Amino acid sequence: MSKQPVLEATGIVAGYSPDLPILHGINLHVDEGEIVTIIGPNGAGKSTFVKAIAGLVTVSAGNILFNRSDITHINSHQLAKSGVGFVPQTGNVFTTLTIHENLVLGGVTLPAKKANQRIEEIYQMYPVLRERQFEKAAVLSGGQRQILAVARALLTAPKLMLLDEPTAGLSPMAATELFNVVRNLVADGASVLMVEQNARAALRISDRGYVFAEGQNRAQGTAAGLLEDNDIKQIFLGVRKKPDDNSENN
Ligand SMILES: Nc1ncnc2c1ncn2[C@@H]1O[C@H](COP(=O)(O)OP(=O)(O)O)[C@@H](O)[C@H]1O
Ligand SMILES: [Mg+2]
Image (cartoon, rainbow, N blue to C red; front, top):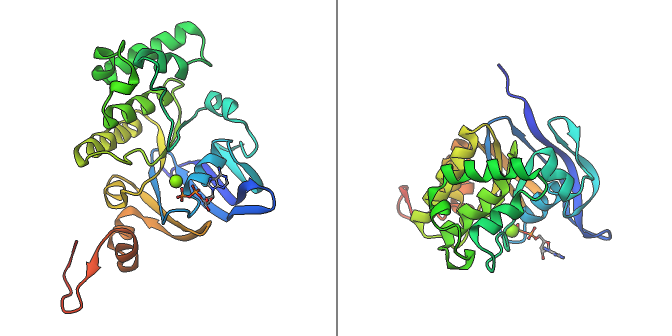
């Protein structure tokens, strides 16, 4: 059985003002059940690309299909309803609100009964959130905060989850835990597109990866292939070859 594309972005040109495109024709797809990771240097346009999918940046050329429907010019509110969840790079939880209030806000587009049911399901998945539901999100550790951000985006039961640097600033242990959360999303039937600086660890749990540079596709392939690619290793995975040695370790 061949996999169906969940997301197909073709020739995406987008930016923050019409006369200054940041993305110059990006192509990317995510198949059903895949974890796909975008890596690349700072300023490459990775966040701009996921924001373009999420309806937060205007797309001036190209198109985006989600389950074969055109979502190129959909706004972010419609997008959540249509089944795409988005965890932005920053400001993804309200620290002055409690954990429970953050979850309620994530389900604000749902009928109240459905929202309560989803919150209950999320508490079953992430007991730590239930235990601490009346505490302000500000008191959570970085890792727990990211789990809350993902949980909040899960309220609408997205079929595609967009994650922008979910492990930024986390300890290796918290990052591993977050990557387990990402794996669980797929086990529950979603597909994932994430941006990661933590490139090696992200590729290890991914099916495929894309390298962006200067608003363009630079490379793409299976995650295993990218992890083995010498150029990618040296530029993005922190592996340096010693001049007198062919072994590779960082
Ligand atoms: N809100 C914004 N307004 C104007 N330019 C922006 C904004 N956000 C990012 N940029 C610019 O867009 C380019 C790509 O940024 P970004 O997509 O955040 O890169 P990445 O996520 O790959 O580090 C950069 O040159 C950055 O300065
Ligand atoms: Mg970014």
